[in-house]
Structures are given as structure tokens and as C-alpha cells.
Length: 423
Image (cartoon, rainbow, N blue to C red; front, side):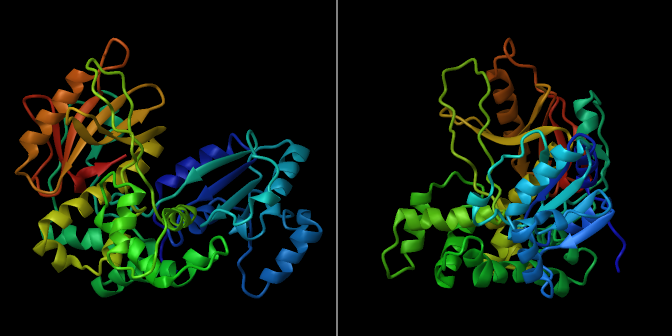
């Protein structure tokens, strides 16, 4: 067995267990939820065990308390296969009156929520896991820390160790734990296998609705072509119709998109809504992202060489990889990741907003040609935020794929290679 690589979720899970009776760890298949939970669990039951699955389902139907017996914290893997367990866990937490009793892991939303009568508020905490960030996979030196910048650190340092070819590989490989440390061929296969599972089984099994494999492929391709944009479902439908001879209703497209969400395959970025000095209208649509950019790469049938030959597509996929990492780092910092767009053309690819009101705006550029433009845009956004009602930004940053080193510009904007970042 390969050695366990520390995850940012280790800290989140430990802290959540100290404050609640149970913790639900949710995220896409193969992102490492079970392995992470196993590091702290004292007993385990796997609801998807092919030998005992039917027996477990019958036990839950008759008396779910049998499933909950075991040394705590007890890990119940793929709990959503028996939704009645949710209420049973909530009841057992109330009966015992102790924190740190159970860990639930799931790679999909339960298909039938009718069997759940209690929200779990106050008893069951939730954390989300993604695929691995570059720092977790060992592909970032971590010399520039977001925590340190939020704490007031003004100096940054670090050298870019990844060339354009290496970046293309990292985007296509994704952060799948099984891909890390493998040969290029084996590593790239992991994302394609995940994509195949989405198309062939998962999209129909998630809620019991039979879906056309060809339409799933069309949806994934369209979503991939619209990555990092605020494309509406109507635009995705129009894109799909160009390759679909049958009628395709908006409700059908919505059903397919919702199935992706239930599988945690997509992770859309919500819009930030700050107090502004101007009367600009803030664009409120979410930005489209998969939980890992390698899913989009697989849907489009691309590889590292294709990205190098198409730098425009490469730029979007690189931005999505950075957003993946930033979302995880924001979770670690007790914050939320947003994007910002307004009617005056001001934008920020990412905004980290912490619970205490601290915030930072970030632009993402694959190359170095547009760093000046990105910095100017960030400074304009800073000037437009009403600091009488909000704090000044803790920092402004341009994340680059090819900048040779991390530095602070004369205007105060940081420029940091992506392979220097950590939480």
C-alpha cells in the first residue's frame, strides 16, 4: 500500500469531529474521502461491500442501530446507499450526548430524500473534499502561504519549477490521488476512467433516471467548452442541440446538470457581492467549473500536447485548476471562494472571503503577457469597493503559470507562480 499523503481535509475533519456528534465528508468518487476518514476512524463499515451490501440494506431496514455499533469514531462509507442511516445517526448522537461518534462518507446525494426526516443541524457537520491540490500532490513548493498573507506577511519568495509542458500534464492529470506519482500514461488514465464511469453508469444510477450516454457526452463536452464562463443552461442546451437530432427540452438539460451536481462532479463558483462605491450592477451568475479540470480535458478528448498547441483552451483549463486549489485553500482558512464581475467590466477570477471579513482578490493568467493588465484590473476593483463598509483587501494577487518567481510589484500586487502556493 502506498504511503498516505496528508490532506487539507485532515485538519477540517479533526476539528469538525471535536465539535459535532458526526461529520459528513462528501465529494466526487476517487478523491480520497474514505482514505482520509480511515486515518482517524477506529472502526469501519463499507455499505458498498459487494458481498454484504444486500445484508447491510436489510439490517438498516430492520434495525439500523446494528450498523452503528463499533468503536468510535465509526466510519460508515457510502452511507447514501441506505438513507435511513441519517436519522439513525442523528438519534444515536442525541442518545449518547457525545461528540466525535461517526464519520459518514458519500460520493453522491441520496437518491431518495424522503427517508430523511431531520436535517441533522447541530448534530452532523459537513465538509467537502475535492481532488488534490498541487501542494497536496507534492507539485507545489508551498513557499507562498495564503494564511501568512492574510496574517500581514508582505514578503514573498519562491521560484517556478514547472515549465509549460509540465503544467499541461498537471492540468490533464488532475488531482486524483491514484494518479499522483504514476507514470504519465497511468496518471492520465485515471481522469479518463472517471469520465467513462460518469457516462456509462453514474449519471443514471445517481437518482435512478435512465439517461442517454450520448447526451451525457454532449452535456460534458458543452460544459467543458463553457468552463470558466457564466454560460446559462439555455446556452448549453443550444450547444447540445447542434449535435442532437432529437428534441431536447430545457428541463432535460437541467436534469442532467443536476445529476452532475448530485455526483459532486461540478463545483460552480458563486458570485461575490461586495459593497461598491459605484452603481455598477454585479453579475450574479455562477462560473462553470468541474471539481477537477481533468474531467473537462477527458470530455473534450484532449491531452498535454493539445493544450500546448491551443493556448486559449490551455488558459481556461489552467484557470480552472487554480480555482480547484483556491477553493480548498479557502476552506482551510474558514472562508469561501467567489468570482466577481460587474457591468463596468471590472472582474476578478477569484475572491477569497474569510468569515472574519478579510478578503483578497486574485486574477489568474497562464502566461506573463497580461500580468500588467491583470494588476491594473485588481487595483481598479480595490478602488471601487466601499471600504467604509468593508475592509481593505488583505492582498491582491496574480497567479501565473509561467512567471519565473514570486515577487511583490511596486503597486503592491503580488505575482506568484502556481507551483509556489499553499494554504
